[in-house]
Length: 177
Image 1 (cartoon, one colour):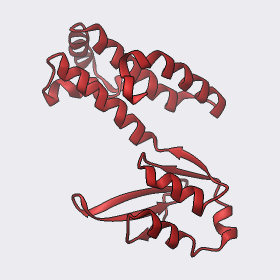
Image 2 (tube, one colour; image 1 turned 90 degrees about the vertical axis):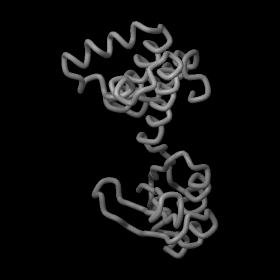
Image 3 (tube, helix red, strand yellow; image 1 turned 135 degrees about the vertical axis):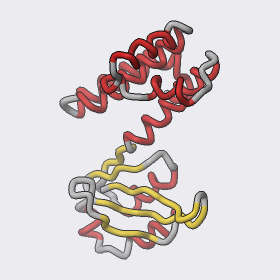
């Protein structure tokens, strides 16, 4: 299952949505983004149903962790890859700005998945990466991080690669790690 929020108007009127990740089916929309109200709504379901949930994907909002712990006592919490990757990308953008690459067009190549770059884009990217060693490392670590999510064959393999990445990337990514 996945729990996320959305707003009808930018930054206002938040709602919480629950989806079945495997089928893409919308399970529920809760007309609130307040932790207590979400828990109350979810706890209306029978305990047997809630105990059967094995895994819940959430974003980085701290409130969702408590929601899952209280409403789905047997579930493992998994942080949504999109939100984790976004944090890494934000750091790449910050480093790029520090190196004088503040335009969206310049940052686009640094943020795009490396495997999706065409030949011309690869040449231009290499030009940007030659500007600064830290920028090159940030880009390489970003690509390695994405690769961990996409290519790990098991949870154990992914966990080990992620732990190794965290040790290496700390020098460049600091707070993100």
